Image 1 (cartoon, rainbow, N blue to C red):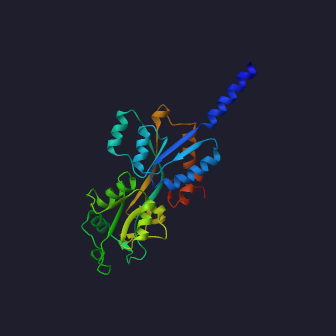
Image 2 (cartoon, rainbow, N blue to C red):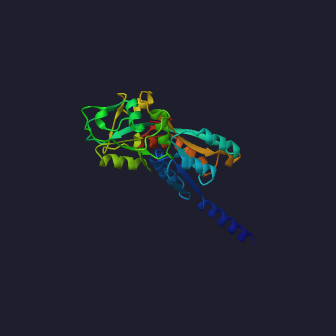
Image 3 (cartoon, rainbow, N blue to C red):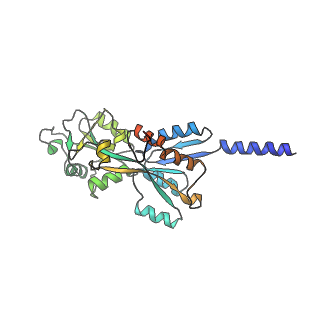
Length: 279
């Protein structure tokens, strides 16, 4: 009888180990970093099933509220309405700065422009400027095709804050679901403009200088690039008795992403580590 009981206990514990899951939702900007984190985490924890989604920062925060996510990636801080909802529902979301990013204004490489001002970007996105020759008489008299991330995106929120400064977005602006869609759209259209996290920039597009400053790691770190921001991971401490989790899959994942290994993966993804990498 004791042997049977021991066998049942071992099977039960093994099932628990196999059944562990980790659900991560949120920012499309953080997604490339999180892909590397998840890959490293699963090598260390092969019995954990990890689900990763990158539909926008708001989806991650919503996932914490409705408990469909264990970890929320976000390229913005909590909105005041989310803080109020957090208090009303007894949640306790803790922000963890995991990286830094510069938001690049991108155009087609064939367009003859290298630098743009914040004021001009604002006028383009509010509809005050609609043709490229209004930006520079040397540019073609062609309509500017303007792309933006959708409203679920933390990158959109940052753009509205730092570029539009709260002004209303023009109805001419075409909203896209992902940073990759912005890259592809600008690459195909010589007269397009968009914005994206610097980690997404490829040679298919040109990242403009803003106020004469390039969106580089060095310029973001020294505070020279004007459109930069921290990137976050949020967890809900109310699910752990309002105490920092010391054990379990969430705790192990957070330890990894903040470790030198995890921070080297931030750099590998094209973003700026928030902490030391041990190099």
